[in-house]
Length: 566
Image 1 (cartoon, rainbow, N blue to C red):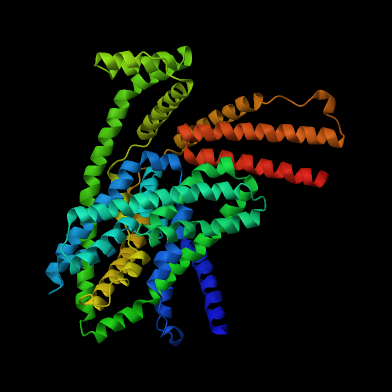
Image 2 (image 1 turned 120 degrees about the vertical axis):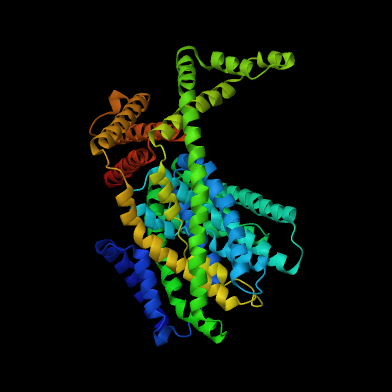
């Protein structure tokens, strides 16, 4: 027991030290942790350490992905969902199939199905590995795409891995595989939505911040475990629960509870991410020993890993290049539509939504019966939804035009596709009767390690070299313009709150309570206005998050002063 405690304490210290020292040395902390883990694997104390891969896949990934989903701006996720879904599904499947052909050619007697299984292990980028990218100057759109990709591609890869393993023992059915994937995602989506809703329903009734945060620690497992038990993707369920929580929490949970969540989950993320990379390094010796005992040779496996890594980068580049062209065409189409949408919004502001809604309906209907149905007076709810869609659509157009994607961004997306501990853990779930299993596990580990070393070690300098000079004055002017609009919105919303009765505003306790209640009501109105603006995508996500954080800080300070007065 004492030895275990020493190992845990040492691990905490190493994680903290790597986080502090890494940036000062110009080396990403995950790379330092992998190096420390590799060195530690040769110590006698770790000679017999065996790490259950399910501990990573079922115990570490759900909370990490849940936390990332909670903190991800939902509007950016929606805007980039087309790119995210392609990177998470189409690219993963294509990479796994091409790697399957490659492994079938270079590994004798392996077979295509087992090659696809190993390809599925290697194909997904790692959610933890992409944390390296966030420390660079890459654009916010690239960060949104990479974050979204890393949230969802693990599920695609694991379903594909399971399907390939089944195909080794039975005939492969494309429609059967497609049905399995659809079932896995749809059921996980439903479970995640239910858990996310139930999470907020329960926690908004719990006023103790500590208890509230403890409940939040259970949420990713409450979502992932039932989903896995019914054959769905536990990771997708955890991600969906996180997205629901992150989107609705500012309206449902108190500032104190959300502040406690944020601080404690950041600590959990730091520890779990560090532990993932340390355990990845710790497994190197045992994996190499297994290959040597199997008389397969380490050098050939490393050469195969190099080839596989090069192939993954080439396939990713071949996919991202046309993706950028599609996104550019989408931006051009949006630019062409901008005057029409602006005119529609101006008409709504001057005449109301009814005229624009009726005109749009007439354009989309050619059948006389449809035209007659289109003349019916829409409900106020329908008009409100129409107004919101117009506002949101115009904000989306401005978002795409303000942040166009070029070849530099494409290079960042390609080079940021690093593999990590998920690849190593998934490889170790291959059945014991897998042909040349030790070699396959070593290949997967080598791809992950080389990816982190090559891509993770060079992406910072690469992006700094590729990034165009930043017009700091223009960026500052844009941020100031955003803040000015936000402050104006906050002032307008605060003016809608009636002031306290002048007869109660005095130095008495009742006067203080009345003044505090008025201030809290203004803060609530301002928060509601900012959240409506967030849902419509009217402001930059980071600037808006700062404004909401300031509101939370003000409310917490006022409530603390109220406790002192009591």
